[in-house]
Image 1 (cartoon, rainbow, N blue to C red):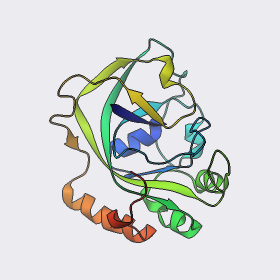
Image 2 (tube, rainbow, N blue to C red):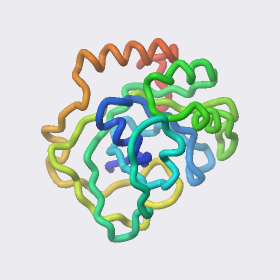
Image 3 (cartoon, rainbow, N blue to C red):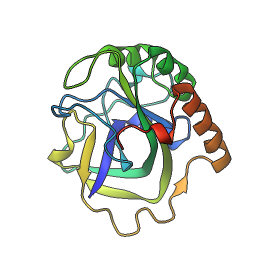
Image 4 (cartoon, helix red, strand yellow):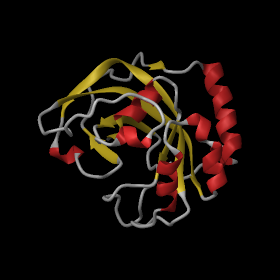
Length: 196
């Protein structure tokens, strides 16, 4: 089974250009009783058209569009591998990540403080990801099951060879340096991985 992670288009763009290599998530309304977790370590990036996303980031471009409609043709262009995931419960650790993402501080503070759906106030989930660009976009039609305020989607099987010849969006040396900085900022790494 293939999975996809739903994220705002502007964040997907930041991941696609190497501007951002972390995902920060509290969870959606339909995450289930146990709340959100980075449950998969390999997934496609599924861009969403949330109309107010530019109000919650510090940079990036996005033309407000109507939400996906059943039958629309969408393109999946990138895939991610989570190298480690942690639940941050110290706001200072979240602040230390500020140079490495494009969210506004207000957006993350609101998520950090929110409580509900199995998730406690004073926490946020973070995953450090390696992103690759697919050689050819995966084109598929939007289905009703892709909707709703949820983070994870079960996807149909992509065309054979979709992940072959995918190219990392960041060079290995740059990525290794960033890995060290992020690990230090959150006091974690692969040996302290959260649920993957």
